[in-house]
Length: 332
Ligand SMILES: C[S@@+](CC[C@H](N)C(=O)[O-])C[C@H]1O[C@@H](n2cnc3c(N)ncnc32)[C@H](O)[C@@H]1O
Image (cartoon, rainbow, N blue to C red; front, side, top):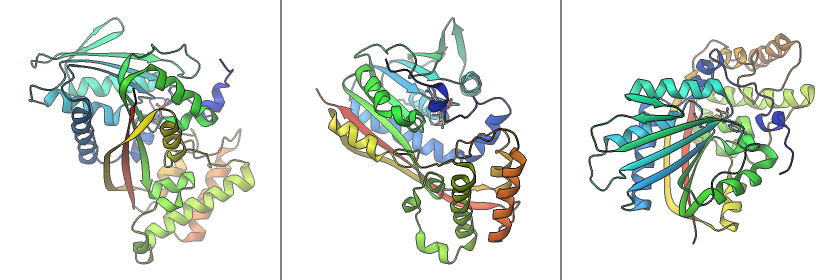
């Protein structure tokens, strides 16, 4: 296997820690939206997978599992007898803190019993429900079991593989059974701008009236220019959290068909410019350049950009975002 530098995979972002996770969470969609996305995801999968009694699911880059936990709840709450009765769920993440966060989130929602590596979700629905979590760097780890999984979730993960994304997709593809389904989530809307997808901003004409949103997008654009000019750092990637089209094309060229299903939910997200700027210090988001030494200087420069544009760093911003889920099925 090709040798891979760990930093190139994580884009130099440190593993998330207890301190960084709450800041990272500020960009999560509201709970009711996550719930809706998860319900629609479950309904779509049930529809695609028909009356299959057992589902083996793989979720790489599972993180805190904000769609995943709600998805598991939908599954457990389903009263229909045609639901799957055996679910084995494998979660992989390179960050220990993320896996701890996932476990805590799981315990908030379910009664769980831990047996070695396995976590069993107790229920009175006659459902055998097992979760296995593995801390590993997916690209550097050994091959996954071939023809093993029925479903694979990539929620804002594949872009983390940078130039190794095709290698990652090949590895996932091999581990899926025939008719196996890949679900890929991406961010559309104002936050897509951090990955240079300015064409994904919607309600474009509203920007002429909503100057706060316009100023925020200007802040993003000017920050990207600063990163390039003064820090030799670009957020542009062939694929990104907001643009998975090359990955979609690659899947279609490699024995997958795109299904006529789509989950799409838009929402407003509230935060301040200061939430972003304060995240520079620990480099919580990979949108920021890797600064060795004086991070305060970058923070000052970002404050300067906000001041030039006339946007208050403590003002509550209401950005418009959208989460889209796309479905691909492995051909026979
Ligand atoms: C943007 S987060 C998404 C987390 C989760 N899917 C969610 O939606 O909340 C990406 C996750 O991928 C993990 N990650 C990044 N590169 C990885 C790799 N090479 N192997 C395993 N996990 C990785 C990170 O630790 C992080 O938890």
